[in-house]
Amino acid sequence: MAPTGDDDPLDGLDARLLLLLSDEPRLGVLECSRRLGVARGTVQARMDRMVRRGVLRGFPPELDLAAMGYGLTAFAVLEIAQGQRATVAERLAAIDEVCEVHATTGQGDLFVRMVARSNADLQRVIDTVVAVPAVRRTSTSIALSTPVPPRVRPLLENLANDE
Image (tube, rainbow, N blue to C red; front, top):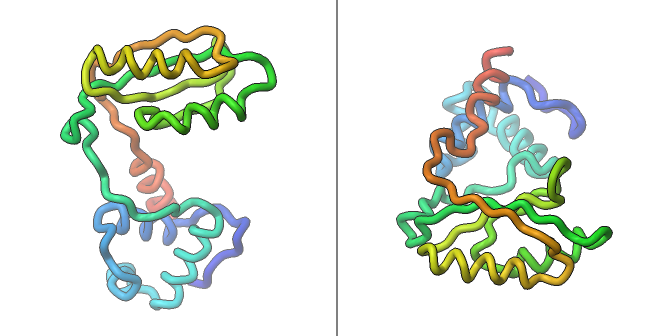
């Protein structure tokens, strides 16, 4: 199967390669090609293309934040001053406990996922977030559990099965 162009959507081979790397991120290109039954150059070209497109952004280990001492996860909806999204996002990125920030529609302008070591530590983190200039109002909720963790596997499996 020939590599597709940079603008082409992912196909079944791309999905099977990503599933394989998700399951075993330390596999080399040669082993991936052997398991997928395609040439080494095909696997390398696919990986290079997915890196260029931003689909494949690296191979970090999966970390358990609770096991690292950050057992509390909270989500905050922030209302910010108009035209200040980039500035606020930059300031939020400087707060170590802020894990994600999403610009949103609906109530609020930014959706923030943050972690903390305890309730008192969460108060410190929230105080730091609220102190960011242009943050007008926040509403924070503590996550009690994560019944469905972040995932992309079902999407990849669906794509792999469409081939």
